[in-house]
Length: 308
Image (cartoon, rainbow, N blue to C red; front, side, top):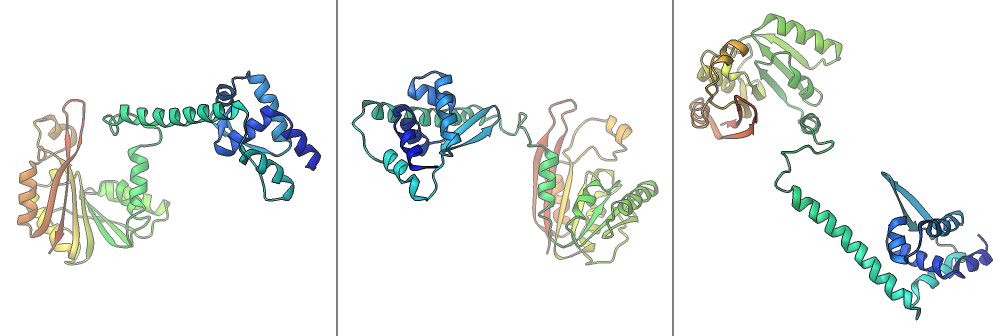
């Protein structure tokens, strides 16, 4: 770009106003229209000239395009820097600044108003991209290199995700079909650190002090004797190992026995806390982490504890 071309651009007061504004804030055509009080075609014509001369850059954001000043460090742009940084006695400088401040404040207010309106609904309504599946994948990336046993694993969906980071994951299930399906699935996915074992929650086929984490996800209510299952979880854990239990809070939906093969209709918070403590664990925490909004309105408990 030649100096004469720079001077030609700066010779037009509208383009000079636009450059000064775009040097302070990224703006859309509609916002420039509001500040300069000019029609869209005139604004677009000036922006086209500025863009052809590499004085502004543009950025797409959905259906909107935002423009910003693009000035490098070469000497031929010094004229522009001086022009937009200097004070002017022209009356439109003050009005431009006032209008720009109003737009910036409006953007801030709109953002604050949106979050004020949805603050009490966050986590309850749909938010694009925020799904339990996505959150689950994110959290599974945080799993350290440890040995995990998934008790009552079923097909081992959770274990397959854990195996991506854990040193080793062992799935224990009393169903031969589940063990066969899970073993085939692990082979197909190339998960050599994922192992399936046929076994019972109340007689885990693992030696004592052999794992770092015992996981019981919606399996404890299938145990004939939950207290013995928790004792077994304690036995196979190394000292300092962690217990995680995800299960239903006590409910009255009797059909669960027939529909899902449940032996227990969930557990009370205090009841689960007591059983975990009686098994020898310390630092137990039991809390409701989910409530379904459709009948029979199941609630989910999350319990955690440590082997002393």
